Image (cartoon, rainbow, N blue to C red):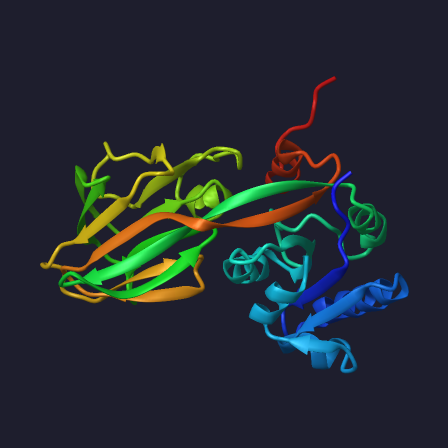
Length: 292
């Protein structure tokens, strides 16, 4: 049996009716169990005005378990911050697919009861760090749980860049962009662009060109300990961006270098006992069930 949690943080999508209802139920249920509960400040007023309200950084410092209510986007936003702390994270799905949110909003009590009793599984998911360098100086950086994407800033069009792996030239590319994805993100934007699904236990990255101007260019899987450098051609006429999980956008100019590597931080994801990744894939992607 794993260690039990004592201080629980509640996080959710602000101003969302369904999320607020689930957060209120969670707050009341956890209080009845005499646990310490703090609520992230953006949702505290709508959920429990009397609750201890803190920002996300303070929540990471205080709590040993965070419950994120919402979709995968809310989980990604929280994870980029909470991965810096020794805190476990579990999700209640109020979104669409919900690859990262295990618990159902209508009957979370049974599963969550087992988790609070120490009956759970721990899975560590690594993050990426994306840096933009200009004339040898670091101009911007951020982290990503799913993917870092180089793309045009406004209207989709072809751009030119070179790709290096551990300072070894791999190829030059004319495409609408490049997706660099973790295994966690391999079921997100990377999958939509034709990339393979990587199981979460792999220490690997997948590079997926976006609409490359050649039929011979295909996604490639590399060791996650590699350092990826995308060198943007100075001949690109427009400004570009690097998007982290589709939430954070770093400005890129022609001639800039983008460095993407594995982050030292990891997301400590909690699952109820019996969690099965392939069951999740079958359920979310509509795969066929067993024949017999």
